[in-house]
Picture 1 (cartoon, one colour):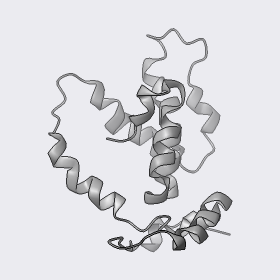
Picture 2: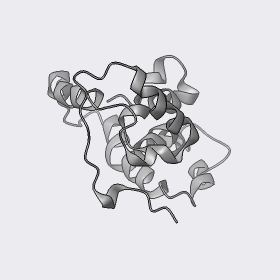
Picture 3: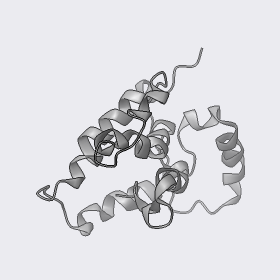
Picture 4: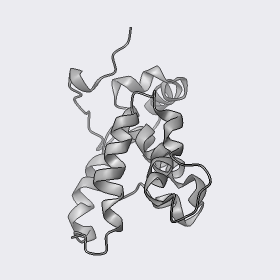
Amino acid sequence: MFHDLGEVMSPINHGEIAAGLLRPYVSPENYWILAHHEVFQAYYFQDAAQLSIRDSREHFRSHPHFDACVHFCEKWDQASFDPNYNTEPLSFFEPMVKRIFARKPYWHPDHAQDPMNAAKMEMAEGYPSEGRVEVDVPASKKAKVS
């Protein structure tokens, strides 16, 4: 729902806009998917747009979140362009949006692996926390650090 929020302001980097807005409230993997989804989505429209370079997403083939971004675009983003796609009213999504923004900012333990996130985690103590919730992250969803 929020992943195309920046489309109105700056289509060429709309993924980064949405990712920046949601960064404190989503996992680092989901942040990466949001920031890169427009490049991955080009896989579906590159012929119609007559892009000179095919498969720009291949620049990211070795990234650990590559497959997750492919999945997001294929299952969710691409499907939403289908005019016959069955969509829910906005009210359906309201509890989900409230749940995401109720999270304690920079809640995911993997946020600390990025210097910007680590700094923001330290600063988060200075912001109001009333109504914020802690999120339990299963070990299988945490990055494997060597």
